[in-house]
Length: 321
Length: 83
Picture 1 (cartoon, rainbow over the protein chains, first blue to last red):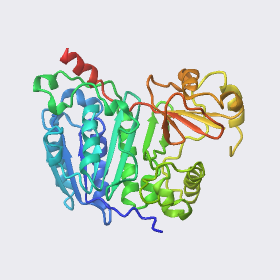
Picture 2 (picture 1 turned 90 degrees about the vertical axis):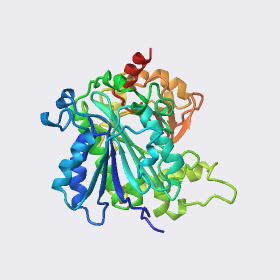
Picture 3 (picture 1 turned 135 degrees about the horizontal axis):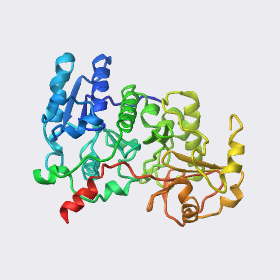
Picture 4 (picture 1 turned 90 degrees about the horizontal axis):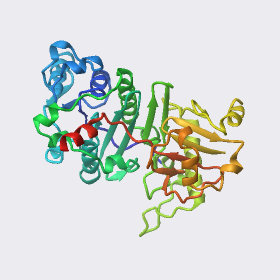
């Protein structure tokens, strides 16, 4: 049984060249330029212009202030990377124009700072994309997360980004694409530090590396990653597609787990035994394939304090446990 | 062992399993809210499956409270504009 993903992206799209996007775009472009058999097309999308306030944590020069973010980067990178097709769209993305983007067969890096836009992309990928990857990164001041929705031939290999996030499914406020210029001008930057922005960009780039590897396990074993720059932790999370509790990736390399649902059923109601086998398969695959570049933080109580902690800490001190 | 997580925080329950096994997700949410920094209304995932607060946690399981993804203060601002 194949362990291959069976899908390769034709292009990369970055939505938002702000706090996260500016730190992603340079490394991603360099990576694409030197990647064998990888996508050679990069589309940058942002309706905003750089301002003085961006200089503290975004990769932008003072001379770029006042210029459109997407166009600034596309022009600069196109001069350096001649083997790539780099283009820009100076626009905010919402339901009215999201279909103008070539998200099919693309890896879309969603580097925006608001849930309404994430919701629009979540629904677009559910309804309109047959094969594609949506990577959504977000951060607060010193911590954040990246969520990955991967679809191949209409099948969800990891869940849509809002599946476990009601804040995306039911956002408050509006998509910037629906705001007037006056309203947009009143939106200040949030309190963030550059290292948190870089943390989100790093994880998004690493997930992209797993996708272009073409390996099913590497691309699908985790669906979300949390990080915190104060404790230097990255915590990957397995995200199972609701109704399909048997994981796709391990099934591809462990035929015993790859139970095809009977006709008329859609994988619901898996027995506890099958579920346990699936979870065991994940561990087996992880041991066989050292692919994860970000290992789970492992047994650790971190900064936790409470009645259980001292006793648990004692046990956790034993190597190998 | 029962593993409790929220964001990057992880708390493996090793010695006190008998005190935690049998509790509901709601019980654990209240008991470990401060230790794990569990946000109000966080969804609960028990061994990969979303559950409600009445689900009972058993030995050998992993319970995650899903932390919200980051957002740059835009919601508050827009609400103010809308008001």
